[in-house]
Image (cartoon, rainbow, N blue to C red; front, side, top):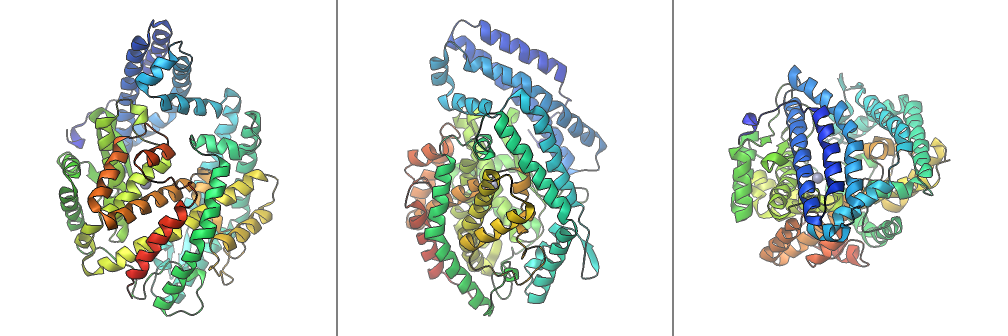
Length: 563
Ligand code: ZN
């Protein structure tokens, strides 16, 4: 069905709530695992329908923010859906307490139960007021960030609009852009510091109330870490420092040489080549059409996928008046199909939408076929990002359709950026661990901690007295630190996975693709570590994995240098 023909009706929350109560009762009354499974499937249908309706409203609202109807519907759903949470939890609790638990685990998937158990550990009605306050603080941060009206080169711009200037081929412009940005954060120093201080204290209190030593443990549970501990993460970061950071220093030295700079500074970070980054060639329509060709040729499965996407108008990627900013990939479970939203702007980010976001969408498309239990279709974040980040590499033979004679430049910076990203992601994670292990730190102590860790993970950085950054507050730009604590290491682990697929594809493309499909077909039926092992890949946490994988990718960049 075409996206525009999918009917939307406002969910009847009172009826859904009643139905959830009824299903919970039926579950308790059921006399066998089979009967309980049938009730569970009914519950999934109910949730799937609700989620399809709220997603339709959300997508239509973001596609045209001037549409009053969908704006109101979206607001209404935002208010109502959290109220369903308690009923859902009660249903899940009844499922977990089932006398037929063992059989149910076989019928529905044991990871479903492990994940629910983990979720329960991270919640108690007692912390609801704190969670509400946490949400409020997080949205205050977003508002403050979005309120930025930064005077720059005779114009007034937002933080996001400064982005292209940070990549300017003119060094003075790059520095000026970072100075302008830094001044905004300096002007609001107190607010940014206080908001974070309150968030740290709030999250620590939640953790204590739930009986944890610190928010580090609770944060891991909230991020559904079902197969590794904070100690495993710390050991992964150590591997990165030991085995990858020295390689990134070499990459930066190469870049400096390429740029003709002898004193590499923080504001040179955004530029990869003297004449600028690779940009896609052609109109947005042509880029989109190239994406279609790419997936038609890549494999029979991607051909079916891309036909579904185009025939049903499941892409809305061209920029137009009234569209919300940013991009995302979401799912419409009732129709068994994904939806991709973006705003093409002529940068390589447009191609990322067709490789990265489409990787998520393709994974959703495959798991809908192979995994019956809805809640086990999508793996935890590291697994999901493995889908998308690996697709970025597996589509490599078609990148020339987008970049023409700039393709080699694109490939080089794509591989270099992948390697450079991992230590930065670890820095973000390590910083948060320090912060939540020592919630009493003052804002100044937090900045000093960040600076100390910068030296560990990005030793090539020289802030050159830039405002804001040189006092160690640069982390305040990283919205995950405020909004989604400990959500970042996931990307690092996924990036290591994607580099494994990259290395494999260089040796044997068919074998790499088969392994990728095998990973996708498992959906979220296994934990991240088990997913990796079951397709005969190494888990990033396995000792030596970071070293081998990153060394191979680095070697490839050495052999594919472009001026
Ligand atoms: Zn992603």
